[in-house]
Image 1 (cartoon, rainbow, N blue to C red):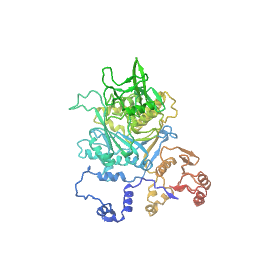
Image 2 (tube, rainbow, N blue to C red):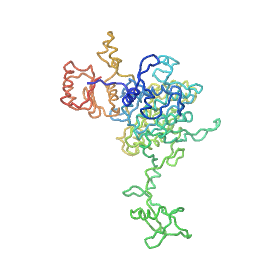
Image 3 (tube, rainbow, N blue to C red):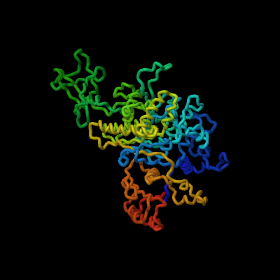
Length: 637
């Protein structure tokens, strides 16, 4: 019976091990800066093995780099020991929902999700900080030790937020932003399916750098488009030179050869044109005659009349070639009818799967209005009757983007979820077509009180509105509290306003909060603690005292790669996950309970190491499972 590791993998070590297995002769030993002997890769031998050129450190090459990029890569691969603790009281329909709302630093959250959601997320949409002078960014410091960084300038608040202002006078203005975004995108890429796609909203401050970062992570060949969204309409006379009325949406594929084609969803008004329907689908009768073209040939009408020239004696141009016309006649795709005593040749204009999206999203788009930041504000204002977010994305814009590649049962993740627009967009889209799309929204627990001293008068006004709304609800002044409440109210509104019965619509979400590991340090370094006789009591129980059985369950699910949205049921002293796929028991375990669980034949069975009721239960454990369910994978913590 093995122990669960209860921490994320060290990807750098795993990659080194793979390389060592492939090319053992390329592995050598050297000394690090402290004189400690370490194993390393010999680039010259590796170059010989792969029969290609490996650049030396002095050779010039085309690359995009910045200070601390190497450390940023190491940060993306470094393991963490953390947990996502469930919060039932703040959730909606906890037991049945398949949506997740996760509070905490998104880099750590992404690392925790990486193994469980590896290649499972169809779409990522993010709206990260744009790196304006007053914008807050996540600060992953690479130049100081942790203790120095924590004590400097109060940049970590009481919630542990890595948030600082990044003024353009900062000598590392772009570097700090790149060190924030790079490791998050590096980890997020692993979550995407092979046909997955990434959308990033950004403005002109970092779009040039962001594209290079994405080229580095996703590959230049997987670039799809740089969309332009008209996010403002009118005004702008107070601009110094040019009024900026747009933002960008950068689009990359995980693997372009596997990516499905993009189509816009047609508006109801457009779809009404296709009034006819047969076994092939919807269509309308359209004229086969064309004013210009090169398809000239005679067509005989039912009464023997031949249509070849128009009233002016010019040859008639037809839509398709004569062989294609004859084939269409055989397949009942053509009809020739009289309209006001004149013959008309018509064909079935089939409703296409969709319209190819255009690279420019205007406020008066061909298909539908994608909205502006003002309409995004209106979306939120409707629920709180106050402006409590600065420039939130409109629901219609996100619904439009989701419609490109998110099928009815796919997962989308937004790890800068802010106002929670992604959740409302998913619920609204599901309500329109009976979809089962699922979202994972991740947001840092930002302290709104910090914005009350912001340099912008508008930012201060918005923060004051948000604080007043939270005070009315008796909630702490934390951004995630507003995000969750917006989703709750949006879900109720969608159900109430839907013309159909939406009882089966998933408007719920499970709230999970990032925290330190549920396990004490002794769990990870038992040998060190064994030498500390005064702390031997740590071996009596290696789980932190303030953690619940459900806390343990969710960390176990992450460790075993079980999606955090699957069904969970409490069966007495045990937890039944995903209809018996995992059965976990963290209370007292005797031989009778072990036998009962083994007879259910779960794929995984997990127990708490200190919970066995006496030596007999521990001795009988393996024999009971060998008898009733030998294929069950058993783990302890």
